[in-house]
Image (tube, rainbow, N blue to C red):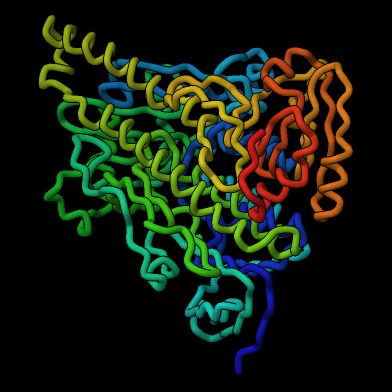
Length: 557
C-alpha cells in the first residue's frame, strides 16, 4: 500500500519553471514536492539564452554570478553572426560583451539598458543544474526525479494525487493544498483539466516554420576550420538550406538545428543524414560526434486559454508554447514561477485571501500572449526572408545579392537580439492587485524601453554611488522605497504591514536623480520586483496593502 505525503504545493515538472518555483517557495518555508519523469536535469541544450530580466531574478536570489560562470568560457564572444555557410561568407553580425566583460559593461549603460544584469548565453542544461542545486538546499523542498504525476483530483479543499516511479514499482499518495503543472508542452495536467490551447500554430516559413532537426554534437574542428570571427550563434542563410548552431561549451559542443522539407520523413532520419546536413551547413566535410538528435516543429504561438482551474495552476511550456526566436519561452517560464510563488506563499501563510491567486491568470496570460506575439514577429522577420539563387555566386550579381542580404540581416539581428523592450517592458496593467495612479506607461516596443515607475511594471533601475544596484537594496519580500532628501513619515505603512503580518522593509534613497526617475517620493515594490503602487499619501497604506494582497477595494494614488 502506498504511503501518504502531505505538502503545501505539488509541482509536476522539473524544468526551469518547476525548479524556480521550488526555490522561491522553499525560501519562504513552503513545503513542496517536485516530481519529474526524467532521471535528472536536462541532457540536451534546449534553451540557450538567459535574458537580462531573468538574470536580475537570479541576482535577487543570489546566484546570478554562478549562472554567468557557466556555459561559454569567460572570454568567448557572445556575438550572433549570419553567414552563407558556417565557414562561408559573413553577411551580418551583432557584437556583444563576453561574460567576463558583462559586469563592467552593464554599469556603463543607461536608458533602455539601465539594468542590474546583462543577458547571458548559457545552455538550459547548465542552468537547470544550478537551479537544482539551489532547490536542493531548501529544507522544505523534496524532489523526486524518475517520478511522475499519475493522477490528481481537486476536492475543493485541496489536491489528492498519486505519483509513481517511472518504472511503476513505487507509488506515493500526495495531499497538497495546490498543484502546479509545469510539465511541458504535452502537459498531462493541462490535458486532465480540459484546458485548450489558444493562439495559432502551423506557420510555414523558409525558416522557423515547419519540421526542424535538432542535433547535439561535438565538432572539435569547428573553430579551427572556420575562417570567420568566433561567435556564440551562427545562422546559415542560403538558397539551399536554413540552419543555425549555438556553442554549448565554447570548445567543441554545439546545438545544431536545420529546417527540413515539409514532406521529409523526419522519423526515418539517421545519424548519417545528420552528418550530411551538418556538412552542407558548414560548407565542407567535417567530423562530428553525435550526442543526441531529435525532430521538432517550429511555428507555434500558443497560449493556454486558462492558467488556473480551482487549486491547479499551469506554468512554463504547459501554459505557453513558443517558436524559439528571441529566446522567450524559457525566460517567460521563469517569470511565471516568480509571479506565482509569492502569491501562493502569501495565501498559504494566511497573509492574503485566496483571491490573490486569481491575479496570476490575469497577469501572466496577457504576458504570454504578448511574448508569443513578439517571438512570432521575429520568426517572420528571418523566416520569410528570401535567399535568392545567386546569393553564393562569385559574380557581380552574387555580390549585389549579398549586399542586399547584409543590409536586411544586420537590421534583423538587432530586431531579434537587441530587445530591451521585450526584456524589461512586460507589464501587469489592469491587474486587480496593482494600484493604478492614472498615468500611462510609454508604448510597448520590442527594441526600445523607457524606464518608468507607473505601477504594474519593472521598477526603474539605477546604480548607487557605492557601486550597488538599486535592486540590491530591495527586500526579498515587500519594499517601501522612499526617495529624495526630504523626510517621509512611513509609520502608516509599517503599522499596516505589521497588522497584516506582511514582511515589509522601508528603504531610503536620498538621491534626487532617483526621485526624478520614479516621479513620486514613495513606491511599493512587490516581492517579484514589480511596482505595486507609488504616491505621496501614506494615509492610504491600509487600503493599498489590502488591494495589492488581493483583498481590498480599488485605491487611487
